[in-house]
Image (cartoon, one colour):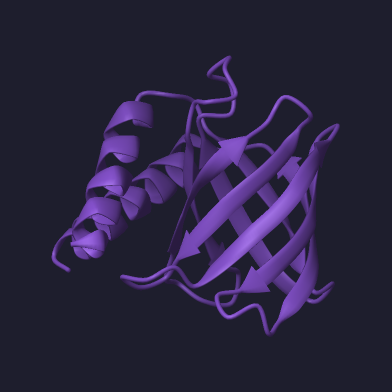
Length: 143
């Protein structure tokens, strides 16, 4: 029941932000693991509006789904979903064109710093990330 509710939330978030312009961030987790993160919903105007996105390790082709919120101080929480359950959490803060913070594993046994810098996103990149968001939402709706 809880998985179904979470899946419906992700699908709803995906539909709600699908027409929005996203932002691309590139950087590292643990100063060595290269990732690319795409987020939508950052420019909605209220702190209660959801953020949805996806990211991938630059050495891999698969994507992970993320969703979360930003508060009025620029702090952000993004819940990572690599499977039907959440697999990690990004806790960070926006600093100019960067997001800086810590990534935590789902069991909180691992914690790594991350730093991501905003990059220019092409239409092709945005399309790939948007497709990944929709595909992951559909995949998790089966659970």
